[in-house]
Amino acid sequence: MSVEINNETGWDLDLTEFTDLVSFCLEQLYVSPAAEINIMMVDLKTMTELHMKWMDLPGPTDVLSFPMDELTPGREGHPSEAGVLGDIVLCPDVAAEQAKDAGHAPVEEMLLLTVHGLLHLLGFDHAEPAEEKAMFTLQRNLLLNFLAER
Image (tube, rainbow, N blue to C red; front, side):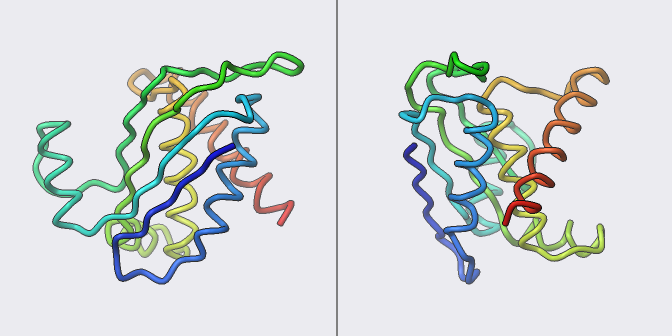
């Protein structure tokens, strides 16, 4: 599993924790061990520019996902194909504001957003209520199981 993380912000983060989380999630979702994923942590200005360029929406957002090879989860004994999952772009400053509103630590919000972005790379969406329920339940379970095993 190839997980590359670039922190282009002033945030002092334990990037190993994010790598471990992504590896755990991909293993749980039976994604090929040869899959590749990139995560970038960016500042407000960069995220605002990306949000406008790719979503045509003003202001920064918390996370953006850019799927590449359109990989989907596998199943036990039948992992997904190898390939490039894509890129996740996180904005720690936006995550910190959301964390404050939710009453938890900024790093917990960033880990949650990492799982959220990863699920988008694997084809999950939350446009419809049933999709949202399924995606958010899976997102929550993956994160809680990861945190319980640490």
